[in-house]
Amino acid sequence: MVSWPWSRDEIGDPALPKTDRGTGALDDYDYDLVPRKAGVRIRLAAAEPNADEIASVARLAADEGVELETIVAARTIEQERVDAPIEVRVFLGRRVSGIVGVVPRGLESVVDQTLRRLEDRGDNPRIPVEIVQTRRGLRVELLMGATR
Image 1 (cartoon, one colour):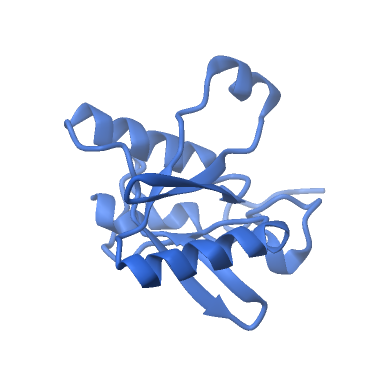
Image 2: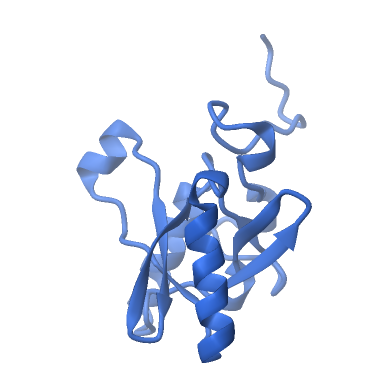
């Protein structure tokens, strides 16, 4: 099959249901993988298996009024070699949640580069998070534009 340069390849793991592959686009980032606009977001994949954890995080965040941020470790060489998915947890004040989703396939490099960029400039390597309600349930979105 021919892949034309102007065609858009699907983002996400084809093993997941189409409604749970996450969303995002490489077109939202410049050459250095910095978000072009402040409103750029990535919706995490694999939210359905983690729906209970996402709901408990949303409840705790509403009760305690804390700002949600990710806890994502940069990928090791071994993880890069086997193309392991990047699992995302949420930091709730002093507590860390369980896994709330994974970075959609094809956007791992964007998240990796963002974490490295934040660390290099002396900021906490955490990406702000928002939990949104969709027709399919609660989903976690990384606020990538807030890291510019």
